[in-house]
Length: 133
Image 1 (cartoon, rainbow, N blue to C red):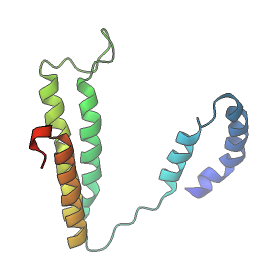
Image 2 (image 1 turned 30 degrees about the horizontal axis):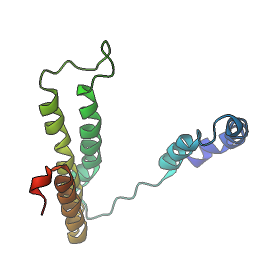
Image 3 (image 1 turned 30 degrees about the vertical axis):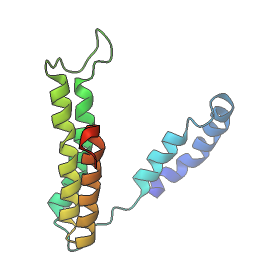
């Protein structure tokens, strides 16, 4: 991947010098995307590979799926849900399952405990204030 991006570096540098005067920080998103693409995907040997690979997909699908019920304007919306709040609550609760799946699939007790802690923090954050201890 680095060989594909290397020829673009001078072009990106030139665009950055031009854009930095007009709107500083605009190309940070581009830099973050390139950095994400160039990262190595390390999968340990002991993991349950199908579950380990699908867990981040479930987390992202639940985050983006909630956006389907949000109206962007009076005339433009993705889906016309009569039960929008109920749908958003249901689809965002799937995020907890993805985090727990990632911890479980890693076949590591510390990763499982970390996944359980993250899921508990998500649940506690989204609870009404009367439920908190």
